[in-house]
Length: 430
Image (tube, rainbow, N blue to C red; front, side):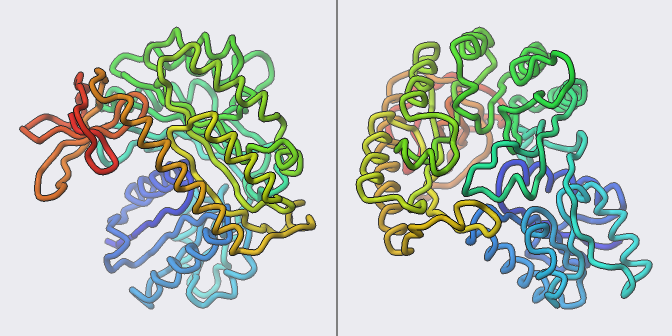
């Protein structure tokens, strides 16, 4: 039996697809092992959202070949598409497979082994996998990919060119997968996509879009929580939020991509909203939900970003009071409009601004977690961990706040009411 090892880089969609590939390889007769182990096949699910992601992808491919020089090293995913020509010339890489052909990985490997030396490296097209094994190893929370592609073409982003236009899975397919996961014991599902807010916009006729899908999933027996991946701010309307608030399984955890708190920067980014509109969307979430967790992404050092624009962004972030922020230094991506813009900033300025926002993020995140001290919350227990020599069982609240309980035999995958008393590193202790 051949051994295969997979390593995933990048977003939750990539993580979902990696689990599908692992399941397909197992079905084809491979033993799937840890990436650090010796294997006959190493699969690196690459990412290309930033230059750092590109570099990490290359590093993992070379690490795999170093672990077993005789192994077949497979580059899959977005970086495999973006740098297919470069990877085809890389002696550490044997096969290049992109997003559409991920679902054909087992067949591609079979062909390669039977025609070794003749099979050309595979260059990916774009596509959407059907339902697969989307559950995580903890058997508590499962990520479900419901949509692929993006039609937004933000000026800094290469992903629409690598993933293609919006394609949505049918509601029937998604419902079938979620029902199967709930029946097997999963309590929570996380809906993900490259541009989740566009779910269903490619269907002919009225599908109800993302809200229609949520209404379809909400009654599924055994399912306790539905969590949403990253959302476009414009989907947050009064009607949409009011409908979410009526579904008790919807987690009050909303990731609204921002990117900048300065209107002029947002225009250059080709984001289709203003800071005033964004702030209004956050107000709607706080009107219909009690203390919702609002998280976001921010890019610093975008071409032309002046110190005044950065200060405007910082002030906006402080005003919104995010639970968590993912802060990215702008990364020039060839083929995007932003790559040709004047005013490209030095790395030192990007790094300084990034550190400043990360310090702010840490303060805001701590304040949000402390707001739950003494308040009741529902925690989905997930795994035991050891902190400072003591064993705890940890889990997440509906807001995705990490909570810990001294371990006393509690069963994972159960939802329990807890009252947090104090902070414990990056979580709260109940």
